[in-house]
Length: 357
Picture 1 (cartoon, one colour):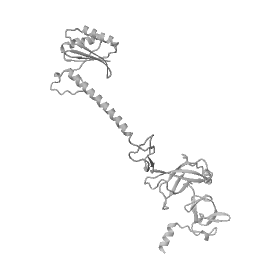
Picture 2 (cartoon, one colour; picture 1 turned 90 degrees about the vertical axis):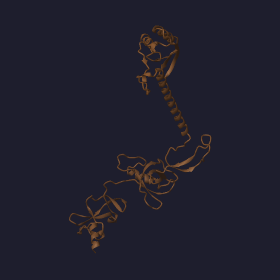
Picture 3 (tube, rainbow, N blue to C red; picture 1 turned 135 degrees about the vertical axis):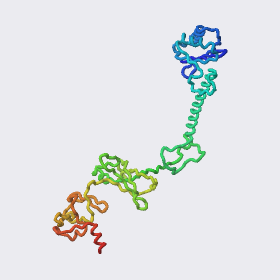
Picture 4 (cartoon, helix red, strand yellow; picture 1 turned 180 degrees about the vertical axis):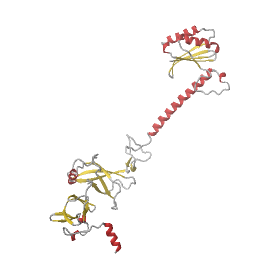
């Protein structure tokens, strides 16, 4: 605690502070004839009467306009409290800028009053800031904010309508359009095909370089340029339709997609990495199966049966029967017989001949 002594011509105003809180306050008459022992015993009695141990006092500050008794008070502080008092006077750092021509002419009581007024003003500013924060908080309650970004598609309350638990609780419907969800259905056969390809719809596989995605076709039959990722698949089949629901999330930065519209969905379930493909027109089918003509190193044609996979964009995946660097006859294979000599021609050479003609 801090013991403060404000020595005036009539009274010595004494107070005891704990932090910023004043615990006790006393007035003692200013007597220039009083000794340091008399003043010390008087203060000891006041502390004892208020059940305060002098050992709790760890600092003393004094200001005085009666220089004649300063020595007496300082001597009392050292003898009875064992503390050297701090005197408020010009030269002591108080945070107050003294602009007197001769600061030493300024009384210490005025310096103390200025410090007190400054601290009181700081406290008032802090209280005002707290009141302002509370007012802004209460004002914020009058603003209704949506938990998501989007656009109001339908409004259920007008200005002045009573809302809240006792009135209307639903104010509007917010549509989030930066990202849209596409709901579609798949059959049990589609599910089996996805399982055969080790694809679990609605779950991401960190070991796979691609994820099941969807491409949609717009109303004008154009392909939407952005693809979506399947993020949910219903774990059960609808017994009435024999299908199960699937959901994909698509980015919609330009808001070309509108909530509620219908579209065509194409789901990517498999990606063949490093697959061998040939133009579908190079594949012929007979009773023995599918075959192609391959050009051997000696420039002769070989009729070779192959095992085909899915067809994508007019190209057929060759599962078995063809190596990655072999030449395949694409045009005119129906004129060939096994072992016939052939001269491979690139598409660029064919275009040059057509231009020359």
